[in-house]
Amino acid sequence: MNLHVNIDHVATLRQARGTRYPDPVWAAALCELAGAHGITIHLREDRRHISDRDVRLLRQTVRSKLNLEMAATDEMVGIALEVLPDLVTLVPEKREERTTEGGLDVVTPSDGLRRACQRLGAAGIPVALFVDPTREAVKATHALGAPALELHTGDYCEATAARAAVELDRLAVAAEDAAALGLHVAAGHGLDYPNVRPVALLPGIAELNIGHSIIARAVMVGLEQAVRDMLAILREGERVA
Ligand code: PXP
Image 1: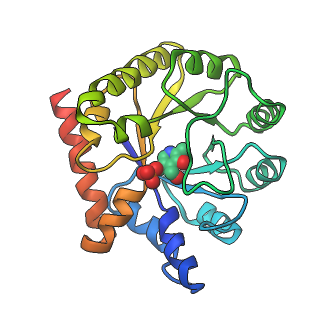
Image 2 (image 1 turned 180 degrees about the vertical axis):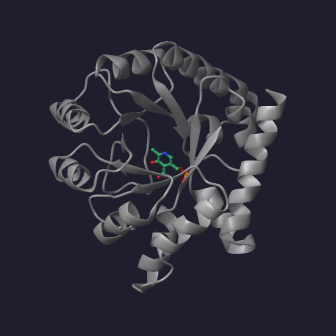
Image 3 (image 1 turned 30 degrees about the vertical axis):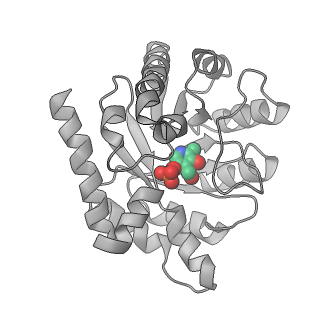
């Protein structure tokens, strides 16, 4: 199981005071030193955390995989075509939201989403679509020609103890369908140290995108330790699987 660390909230802390620190470029290097398999950043339309400068510098410094999360807009596609990340994850984006809410509408895709998939695919950039864990969404992602998807784990993470098994099962079915279609399967959103293990054990999921819980723990124990703690749980899962 690969771990891609989302470092947006290192930039959130910087932006809170308009300083030059903490620097996500430095944070990415520490995550890699601790064993992260990739670095994920979300360049939002309002630039509330990650900036254009961060994207360009991280492209030069990240030695693992750089996953650029972004909305399917012409502006963002233009930046991706210039910067050439290792992977683009397309997400829905609303200006007023605190974080990404829900997956993309892939069943009735917008022209913008279709165009983004085509332009990025033509440039040889692998595209993942962030979708809710439904069989319809998996099929629709495949039909759009995207080689990868990221399953939204938010409902599982927010579920009551009684409901968690149902949500986990939805993730399991979607992951299995996606893997059977030959899609590269990631998952993420809301994953934390206590809830990550059942997701890490699901067959078919190749990587997890985790941000807030790791950065929050890093405030207490340091970033490298926080990444190592998460990797230890994922590896423990692999032994049991
Ligand atoms: N995956 C996607 C598509 C996201 O938008 C986010 C949040 O930026 C994450 C994963 C990471 O979520 P969290 O910060 O809750 O770990």
